[in-house]
Length: 316
Image (cartoon, rainbow, N blue to C red; front, side, top):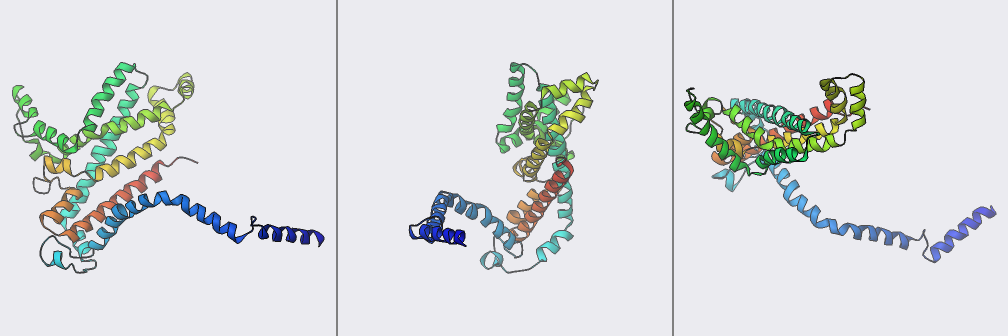
């Protein structure tokens, strides 16, 4: 009892002099913490205005008949799920989903990812001059503006482009590649432009792979392919997941490259969802329907990310 009384007496004394248990001290600590967060307020406001705001507006607009002209522009009306019912019954949207998946798998998952990994592996252990030269060549395509890359490939693959001039000189028949194989053309162009990012990611990841592990596997008789599959790739699994997610999300939003090269044509042969979304929202002035397509594109990106995390997650 005397011990408890002594403790109580100490708490009262501390409170009297503004000690740790004082309400005033607690309010001062909370005020200090709040003051430290004030520098983050401008960044938070910017995120709300320029990130969360447009996302919420897009979600709302997808349930309206918002348009660029007419009554839909002056007074948009709530239409509920009409845009989504139309979306899932539109054969052009179904075709756009398929082309988007093909474009992502062809130019990101297979093209940029595997080609970037291959270049990084081939450059590992090479002399500095060779690594610098190859890196500069690959990165030079990445730093070009997307519209410039699109015009380069348009000039190369067009009816009177460089490729047809070469085939004519070799006695091989020419064709309009942007008309006969539009998806293959944009896949190659996007792979050429974006491979540098994957190469840089894998260069950094491979630099962290311990050499003694590789040497131990080699002493055990493992071949080069076996060391790659059983040693190197598991050790850089987190880098693979990160790279796949980033280049997939980037490729899903590619618009300028496709629009400059093919404008989504011929017909709808290369109209991926970003191109289709642009056409519906700005060419046909149906903003509400276009934003509904954008939400579908967002859902596809979430599915790809979920698959990457589930399939390539690090083992416990």
